[in-house]
Structure formats: structure tokens, C-alpha cells
Length: 166
Image (cartoon, rainbow, N blue to C red):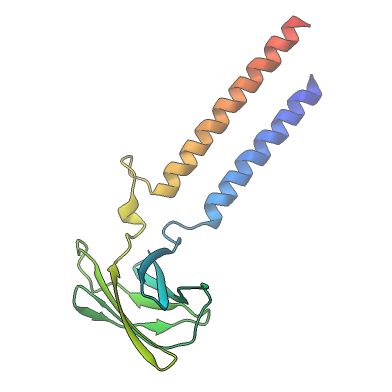
């Protein structure tokens, strides 16, 4: 019985540690969502910490391409855009009003061509809050913890019943 309890303790520790590490490894709002596309290009983006991060790829094969210039307008207001070392582009959103509808216009210069794309600004992490006041990742973590607790209670019950039957 001591072996079973030790094994159960190791399973609980590994499960809780793994779920906490998974939540910590994926910061809220970091997941890129498709924002705009054309026949040649696809633009993915995410809003985190007041910054819009954009990544431009080819539509067909999802390969990155050499973008020479990128301009972004949100609700008609031009945003300063900076290229990052990893090939993505960042635009600070600090000057925009909070309740902006977020009509996004992206102008991409690549391979001697200039393309204008329209899209919708993605939601920031605080805007995806749950009714309890936490972010979406917090809600998912709480739900995962609840299921782990339920499974552990059932396992303890099975062990107790099997011990009484023997």
C-alpha cells in the first residue's frame, strides 16, 4: 500500500508541475491569429503588453518572405512599426483608445510589389478575461486543476475500495 501511495504522490506532483509549466511557458495573448490575407500573403498577429506583433508569410506555402517595408494603420491612425530580428514586426498600441473597433490596414512591400491588406485588430490578453476576473489561460489552468483533482479523488476511492475487498 505504501508503494501505491508513493506512486500516487509522484503522479500528482508530475501532473501539477507539468500543467503549471505549460501555463507558464505560454504567456497570455502570445498566440498569433490570422489577421489578413491576399492571394500572395498571409498576415498573422497578436496583441500582448500593448504591442501588436505581426508576421508576414506567403499564402501558399506559409514560408516567410523578405519584407522590405511594412506600414500599419488602425482606425485610420498610422502606427510606428519596427522590424524585429526574428522577422516579425512590432507596433506599439499605447496611443490608441481602449474601446477602438480596431479596423486594421496593413501595407506590405515585398519582392518589388506593394500590397494593401485589411483586417481586424486582435483582442489583447486583458480583453479575453473570464467572468471571474482572470485571463483565459488562468481559467483553463483552473479547469485543468479541477479535472486533475477529480481524477485523483476517484483513484483514491478505487484504492480504498480495493483494499477493503481484499
